[in-house]
Image (cartoon, rainbow, N blue to C red; front, side, top):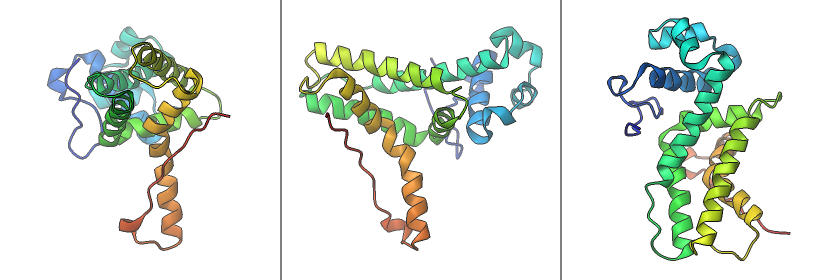
Length: 204
């Protein structure tokens, strides 16, 4: 996979088009359009126009619009996997977990379009975001299990709670930060003094 670099000012993980195949350019373009406008408001024709290809080529690679959405979901998961791969399993269990959480969070902060896409997908009332959520949870479950078996993560809490804790640390705070900022603006708070948010997940 090409190096993940955001385009200037766009907050997108899309590398330079010259480094991508047509299939990859279509996926990245769909991610950007879906994150900005929502899938329902973006036709395959619009994606084709954005990339400069025919609808037939999109259908060749992805079949249907649902197939294109699944491919975009896979792209999001690939970005998380790439971020995790940058962290070495050295140091204490606490340090390893903290480094992995930080790597994912920093990747998402550099690429706000990913956050917007995940947010839109998970908040869709018709449940179409369920496959993406399931893929992210499955990835996190595998990662937590591997870390626990390798002695790189604490086993004091249950593995299920640890999965929730991991995801809340990596993405939960980013999702809620805009809400905090909106509340802060309503009470005329200085934007530079807007409080940060920290989520704590406790086992019952």
